[in-house]
Amino acid sequence: MTTASLAARLWRLAPFLVLLSFLLVALLFAIVRRSDDTTVLRWGHVYETSSAFHKEALKVADRFETETAGRYRIRVYPASSLGNEVSLNEALNLGSVDLIYTGPSLAAQYYGPLGMSDFPYANSDMAHWHSYRDSELFRELANASGAATGNEILALTFYGFRHVTSNRPIRSPEDMRNLKIRVPNAPAFMMMPQATGANPTPMPFSEVYLGLQQGVVESCENPLTTIYYKRFYEVQSHISLTGHIANSLVIIMSGKAKSELPEEDRALLARLIDDAAANATNEITKQEAELVAWYRDNGIKVVEADRQAFRDTVYPELTRPGLPFSPELLARLAALEGAADG
Image (cartoon, one colour):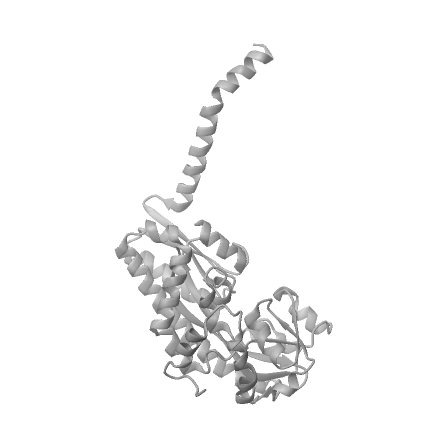
């Protein structure tokens, strides 16, 4: 057979080969999604296996498989094993991941008002946070986000109050002046340092410990649990309880998974995830209370900051133009039961 005739035969086979390739890809995806008569769902997140979030996801996986008699299996991928949080959000939109934990600030890139609760002092205390979680306001924002993305927000869980760590006490807004503090590169996290005259410095989270150790930054701000698990207390002598952001996570199901699950199964999964979110909230709240004592017992100076002074300084920034939520939405959040006056 000549080279020319071989090329001609391959040319005639080209449409068949292309079709075969598509079929093989589809078959491979089906094998990944389905094993025997079991549908496999993928749940990705960035948190460690020791975290309450991962443990609760595993409980959901176990209960969902049991209560559906093995028709479903949820594989949970912790610690960024499917990518960082930005990648997970993208994968969710593509349908290659079925469930994720993510922060409202990241989810807000698709629907801005959802990020309102991550702004400083938007939730004034834990009672306020609970009121927001159970409110019609949160459900409206979640539904509007779903309409914008095609995905479904199933639950809100508590991640922790953010506090300032440093090598000197921070008791008042004036103590923040010129402090070079590492923050995530998002407006919600930069607002408090900017309002108090600090120098907010975005830096990848993986570089924070070394940055603090080497003096690239003087300070950072995180929940007490993050300070503990990332061992920031080894390179910072003071934890000042500013409580400036009540951080949350949302648990989101992809539009693809939502469309493929029968309503009864989807409702069961939503109920299990809502229970898990409540359990994680309770565990994080408990850990925060215990960690204050642990830090003090281990020689870390825990400072009671003047939270009202911080709130009075920072809260007016939430009404400035250009934010991703309206003054009316902020007023509705402030009016919820448990909100501080003002």
